[in-house]
Length: 274
Image 1: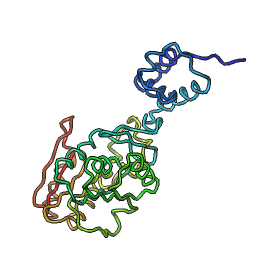
Image 2 (image 1 turned 60 degrees about the vertical axis):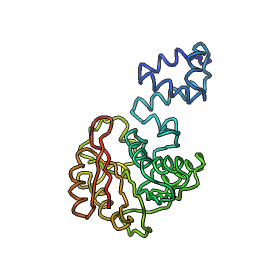
Image 3 (image 1 turned 45 degrees about the horizontal axis):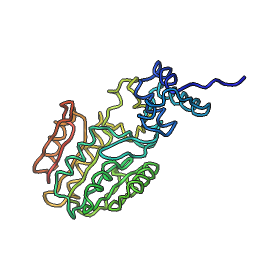
């Protein structure tokens, strides 16, 4: 028996009973290789059997809360789209604060070290904005390194070097003007088991021991020795960790510290100044 075809409008209507209507539109745009305006102006167009199967398979994956970015293989961040897969975190809007704060600095002919690049969104966004900046990025996941290098090539950014390194091991870096990191800082026990999509993401990039503070502690403690005088360490963290960061920074010997709130009025970024 021949399978029936379905038009764009009916496909979106059917999918929207299972997932958010915006997600449904984005998935169908991906499947058909078109933009949103096309879907609106071709509502009666039939979807072929192959497209229909792929679309509704993706709808079922999204219904299970798999992140949309993994389903379509990309995520917008700052001013560009980045390749992503399940080996890297899905870039969050709040992480753009690190890019914003870096770009407020005098970066010309300066050296920046990023610890834990993931898909490379921070390093590549900043390096693309300032071609005079020298960027070294580290990552302990080989799979993530491959994604970051793919993004560097796609965005034609050549003032970055990505290397394999684990910050828990020995550091052999030259002195830097800036160090930046969005490390794992989530306490696994604090999460709702039904949290949307987060359990599909790499746990190694999300969760940290000592109630989420272990990696922040390591980076703060080690970084001061690899910063030039008046160098700056920029960190993303949870709002609950902001006071502990102040206490540790003073103990380690940082001279000044600034903290900034995100759009939800939560303390999200700290800048430690040597």
